[in-house]
Structures are given as C-alpha cells and as structure tokens.
Length: 294
Image 1: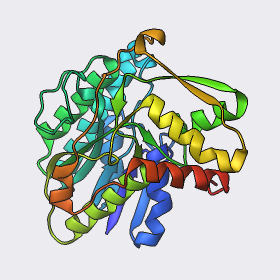
Image 2 (image 1 turned 90 degrees about the vertical axis):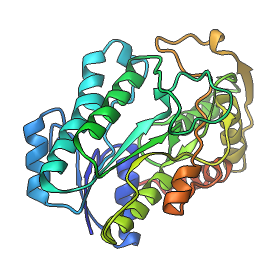
Image 3 (image 1 turned 180 degrees about the horizontal axis):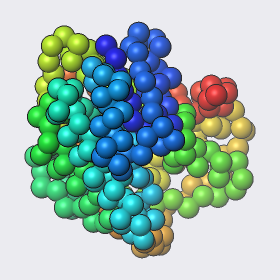
C-alpha cells in the first residue's frame, strides 16, 4: 500500500505522516512547495509520477473569514483542485479520499446532520468546500468524501492551541456559547485514513460521502472550558471562561449555529468511530504540555 498525500504540511497532513510509521504504510507527502494543486497539469503529473494505491487530499483553504475577501483563492483550492485530483485519479484508476466540512450546512437543523440532509452553506468557505465535493463526485466513482468538524491536533494552528496560548496570557476568556458542533482530533481522522487504506488494499471500499467527527457535541464555550481544565494540572492556571453569544462576537463570515455531525454511517461501513471529544482533548493537551509536538 502506497499513499500519495496532498497537503502534507498542514495540521491534518502532518498527523497522517506522523502516524504512518506505526501503520506500516508508505506515504509520499507533497506540500504546496512540491506541487501547485490549483494547476491541473501539475496535479496530474504528480499522481502519474508517484503511481500510488490511494490519493488523499488533506489540503484546504481554511481561513473562514478571509474567504469572504478571497473567494477566488478559496474556490481554486477548495473547489477546483479536488476536481483536478479526481480527474487525474479517474484516468489512472486510483481512488481518492477527500476531506470536507460541516460548513456545507446552514445550521438550522435540530439534532445531528446526516449525509443526506440538504446542504446550504452560509459563506464563501462553505460554498468552496461544497464545490469541491461536487467536483469529486462528478469525476470519480471510487472516492470517499469525509465531512468533519472543529478539527484540532498537535500540528499547525487550531482552536485548542489558541485557547492554550490565551489561557496562559489572560485571566479571563470570552467564548461563543450558542454555536454547537463536534470537536474532532486529527489523530482520529488519520486513523480513518488507514482504515480506508486497508479496505482499498483488500480490493475495495465502501465509496461515497460520510461524516466523521468526534463523539459527542458541545459549544465553543464548552470546548474551551475543557481545554482550560485539561491544562490546569500542568500550568496551575484557571482563567475564567465567560459565555457570550454570536451577536457579541461579530465576524465577516456567518457560522452555522448547529454543525453537529452524525458519524454512525461511517462506523457501520468501516467499523471505526472517533473517540469521545473530551478524551481526545485531554490526550492532546497532555501531549502538548509534555512536549510531544516536534
């Protein structure tokens, strides 16, 4: 089994690379310096040159607010590039795993979203990610689209690491408490990739669109509170975490009030569930505090 990974320097790509050794899977990781994924010819050449068993797209434009000003860039990276990958994979007979987002939904549903719920993104970021999904589906039958949410981990920039920094600098934090979702550790997303790779190696996989997020749901306020609590034994600090509303913290891009994802379909198809989000927060904070990150 040989995987070609786009987005190898991002927080998810870095986790996949770091975890690959213990899985015994060979991975070739490409960064933006290695290939311009917005160039269809460059993407096709990279895939043809490496000849992998599976292509994984962990690259993404994730600046949700900035996307409102950089729609063309968000569309190029999130919308068109996955289509280039899918087209190249189709011509070479290679399956593709592509990551998408909870932001394809508008957040008006009561309860967790399932894969068949109507999509209705609220902003440029969600629109670009939806375009990427549609491009992959239109060009390649043998694909997995994994929608996930509130991603964090050891690598790169993310909400958990921001809260750790702020908790060390301030005595009080104000965090939005009326947006709900499922915090998801990159460790679990990497685990899902290796499960999918095993199915491919065995001659097939359950292709299609799936949700994969941490078990359980919370608010950004609840997420931050758990992070601060997990760090307290290491830092001795316990800043207060004040709940505020979305209206109290206006942003250029609208966020869904509810982006909880139901991941049961992925569990049924692949026999894998992400860990409870509270457990992974404790694992991640402990690892960072003990200096696991390189």
